Amino acid sequence: MSEAHPTRRDFLRVTAAGAAGLALTGVASGSTKSPLALGSAKSCIFINMVGGPAHLDTFDPKPNAPSDVRGPFKPIQTATPGVHLSELFPKLARMSEKFALIRTMHHDAPPVHECGFQLLNTGRLFRDGPEWPSVGAVVSHLTGRAPAFLAKAVSINTGISVSHGQGVGWLNRPEGIGGVIDSKAGIGEMLSTAVGWESFGCVFITINQFSTVFDSPSWDCHADGGSLRTTLNDVRDTVAPSFDTAFAQLLTDLEERGLLESTLVVATGEFGRTPKLNSNGGRDHWAGCWTTLIAGGGVKGGRVIGRSDATGSEPSDRPVTPQDLVSSIFHALGVSPNATIPGPEGTPVAVYPGTPVAELF
Image 1 (tube, rainbow, N blue to C red):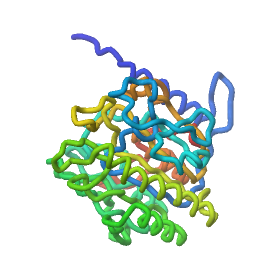
Image 2 (cartoon, helix red, strand yellow):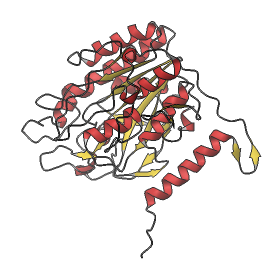
Image 3 (cartoon, helix red, strand yellow):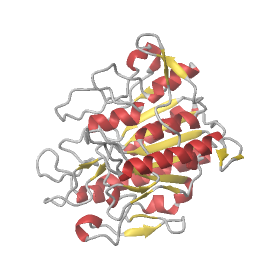
């Protein structure tokens, strides 16, 4: 029997988990430090950037990479010294001190939309087991406060008819969902609606930027000329500008209303895109590395957590999983690491699927 050798990613993951664990418990190098206090955010706005943004063309540019890797867009300096975004995000670049970037998101599940959505919205893969409740449903169960709405399930037909993890799962509480967002609305209209609902103290709001990746622009930039015809030109002309404007305005509106510190805002795709452009000049699915934006709710802005390698193929340090992101959301909302919910058979199950990213706080 041969012994399995750990991969570089396994080593980085174990190292990162150990460091994060030390930060959370307050024990390092034999000295005792104050543990990371639970967050006090009152609500969360979670944005699924449906289709999966190409991280190299958006939030993790690689200007020194070969042309078939770096893509057609130039990096621009942000308000944070040494941090660059793609030229597609001038508004976000000017307010980079308001949000943090996690540039080493990754998972080892199949690089299909459904797997990514399940991991991001619940922290688990359903496989052949029961459907896990979404983060919003869990927080609602623990606090007794229903979400304002859970966005309409994303309509992505990849041949796998499974949930995207945006429901109540086995918790099955009718009061867990209070309404449905119009998935045909523009991202700006949706986020404006979200601010209104958040003003009333809603606990969790999930928004899907697009309802489908077929036959209309989305982040799913295969550029195959068929039903998945979105190109990087579409991203440049339509998709990225709408997000740049809407996300910047969302943070501005929340801050002006005095709500940003109490509202966690997360925006992420279900995976990234291939480091190399495909033969059509687009990019295909890639779960090896991508970027998440996170702001408000006690998160320290102007930070970059983790670094991808020279081609954006995988993390080169501080890898972060969707499970860690979900745990970070629970942490920011003040959910104890020891919290449980009734499982499908009634037996308590742990809420946290990973380790919170301590550097965010």
